Length: 311
Picture 1 (cartoon, rainbow, N blue to C red):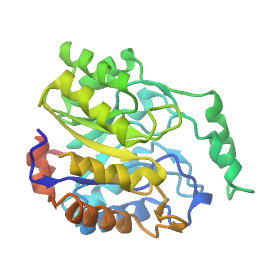
Picture 2: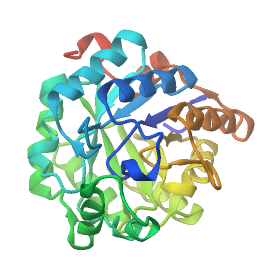
Picture 3: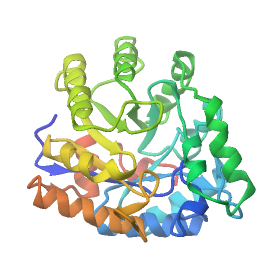
């Protein structure tokens, strides 16, 4: 599963970690999110990962009408795989987060493989003041927060994916989440080939280092043999180093303003497309691989196809 000639570049357009004060370039409205997703696809991303936000304040929400507006707009204008989140924000209940799958019946959606502490509180100290009242409270509230994804939650969520023909992208924030995935696979709640996304650098999950990425891949190989593909998220300044390592190992990479606001040290990215362009260049120049098209990505991951969605 790691022998593909081409690498998949995904783009996470807005997410639920960064707040409007942190960057004027963070897309907020459905129109902005869709425009950024289309531009990212034009820059080389074959998967666009979608969250939505309150259009007045930028607060992360799970409004299904906004999800549909974004998905339909992107699907009309480009061929990228639209991948909505079922991770939402760490403050949201799993039953709220999963509603987007039966609503849109997407080809693929994210699916977290376990609970973790999810600390964003340390970001509060970096800003003297915030544009909106909710921002500091939201961030500081993660001092006492568990991002819930229990076994019972997963037993409830995974059949929803199966019912709607949606492939789960397994978000793995720590090594134990791989063992959770193996347990669910053994019980028939997951099927191979798996697509695993390693998330490194979240405060509460595994640290962002080359050694840790190697370890995660080694453990996945021990558990799943060659019946998986993998992609990598490096939070913040680790986005490009770990993404480059991933594509050099035969894996794939995710970039985007959800995970990282900077194009380089001290320079905010002005768009998601800028981040995608850089990852595409690194994939070609460092790893010597070409970037997969949406059609190639669908074939590689065994997706049902754009025409089989509900948008």
